[in-house]
Length: 139
Image (cartoon, rainbow, N blue to C red; front, side):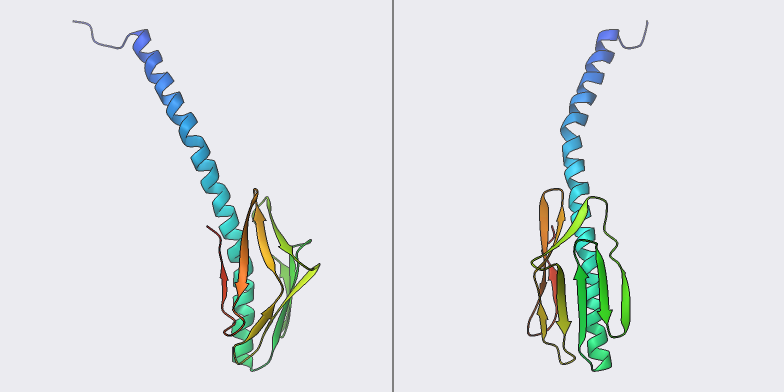
């Protein structure tokens, strides 16, 4: 008795695998794009969180300036500057050329609008005016 698959059976299996791969690929790509958006928003949020903690611990007002066009930031006390580590294809947006977020040592904060853009999607960074807590709506 001979065992094995006919050429037709092999072709059918390969076609089915191809169809499944074609259906699954867009889902994987969308997932990766979502990760880029979340990673970019988290990178900016970490910088703002660090400034908030610095204001509380130092007892002094701390201002973060974000240059959206160049993905750079400045923190005034202590004087820090650096590039924001954004994934490829991710950018910052603000309603001003240089957005500012100011944290008071007692908790309140003031902030310009800041968003992270990736692959046609956006995530807004929100700074609570009363507590200074930083959140983002990246999904």
